[in-house]
Length: 616
Image 1 (cartoon, rainbow, N blue to C red):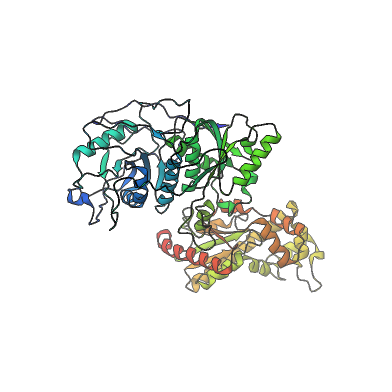
Image 2: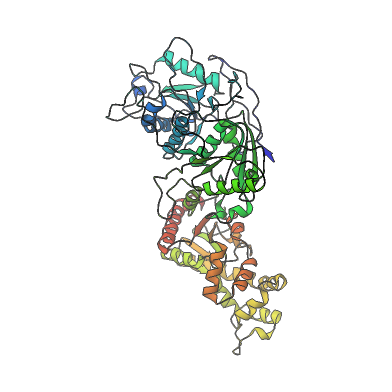
């Protein structure tokens, strides 16, 4: 069982001596925090800080947004506030809710408890939904001061909470009457931020004054409830002002690939409900097979790393048990100590199945909390209309996933792509699309035909190795008979490949010379066995075409007249799609309509043209 690490306690600091940024945390891999140089100006003519003498505003890598407006009035202001914050922060934006707090009073404000009501949960959902348009921002709503109704709540800690990305700037929606960057208010804001969270030593502060547009926004609460996004199972009450019940322990599950704002809503609700422990199941192995483009899923360890950092950031007082989810029930189906389960609209039926399973095993039902899906306002054709990891993976198609190989031994005026994919993936159709865009295409199958042909460089060695019974009456090698000998027989296949691969590689190098003679700038080697044969040393980039194995089998049966078993045997003799993608620079898929494939190829080609001068 994985237990997310606890952050060490940090003593409080003063405004003059704020708590320094913590050193690298051993459980967080990747680049450590580095303050960014203040070298980017904000030049929005309407920005009040320009008139306040702060025209050269920096873009900060991390920031803390303190929201002080009452929630009902805050909701219609949220989009402009987030837009203003996104102009100043370019990586991680923490959000701290303290509705009703005044930064203009003589006394220094202190962090106080915010009662977790369904209105608060709806607002957090609304905030994450609004933040989705700023996809460069990793938004994290901090939950330390948001408490569910419970008899066993510990008091608010007086210590400063460490954050994975210590804020360089603190922002607020609080406004002064004259609309200025009033120093005493900013000092109050900085003191408040550093009394709550670990911030960078040189903490900057900005009163945002967003552009709310021509309409007048009311100062007082509108008392208009936000749309309901959280639905507890009966008999739990549900009204905006209704306090949310706290539980000792609960669970939530998901794939959590490329942690996005819909995941964050699910996790935040679970963190508010749980007071001691949250079990987080992360889908792995068999549960990933039905996912769209599973080859592009982040590895389990990487998903857990991002998930752990987020959870410990938003509520470090909880114990998090992050475990692999290997069946649909997971620990929610068998752990008697769990009291609730957070599900989405899509997984609600699964939550009901978990409860039936528990009842069958003499366990109490879990309280189910159903979260509404976040709509993706910018989804495109073949993408889901909800915020979804599947859509994010779809958008990766055609993008460069890792730096190209440096190949000084290859001709400097020619860029070589190795195009591969499992049998039936549609790589040859992709090759033809690339040819239509101007690439010189080398078909390794055709080179194989040339090598097999009577008098070809591989003809005599193959006949000597496999016998004359693989020949047609006219002396031509019967490739179907030869294929039946080698597919599924590793020893025989190796004999054949040891003969063929060096010959085809030599012919491919000759074709590369022809491409140069024709004045081509891009050459594509279309080869199913590109990586198995070790031909990646002949190319600058490997491009892989992926398709679900079931679809590949269907295509092979239809195209080659083989049985399903024979098609399966052929695929088993090749590297899997996942193994190919793990060594690829660009991934494409022919799963959808031809015009969708064409758009992918055109996108990949356009991006390629931009990076060729930087690689050659």
